Length: 237
Image (tube, rainbow, N blue to C red):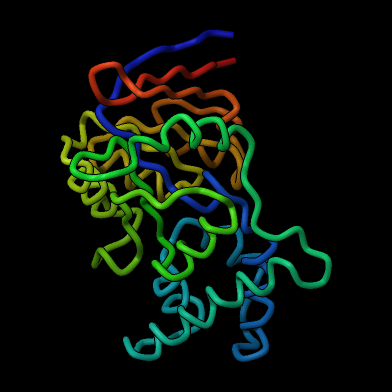
């Protein structure tokens, strides 16, 4: 196993599938929505919707066009994720492997005026805040959610904003992502990208050419740099 060591000014984390696993809740939410939108092909949706803003998925799969209706239904969908995640014996929203030690190490660097890490998610602020609280992850001052950008992933806008909130150049940022759309977003922003094989197949992730590809964050360690930024070690098989 090879260990690669490098330094970045900031790390920009995706949330769902990267820090927390809300798969059970997402499946339950789509099942709930199928009662209102009976033509939904849930297996097809689940194969491609991950990492994309809820409003964009509802626009595509439910045929919604009104911005007011999209916002209302997006809020209902994400509320359904939280309630569905613990219904019928489902395991709920849980931390993914390797996340806790990284969060413990980086917690002191979450605050302004110059945070060294951010969370950049396609979820709404209300849902993301709830999911992070359930997972016991602190919300950093550099926090980008669906409402903060006009164009979500795979466009570069979310990660460009994340770098801006950390007050660093995107080229000096590391993005951590589990979804092809998120990898594309991070690369388009000019960031180094670690891809995780937590929600998609290795082949799906390789097709988007992340800089590094590992199973999960158990293969990655991070420490606050002595003079700022973050020192990263990635173990590659």
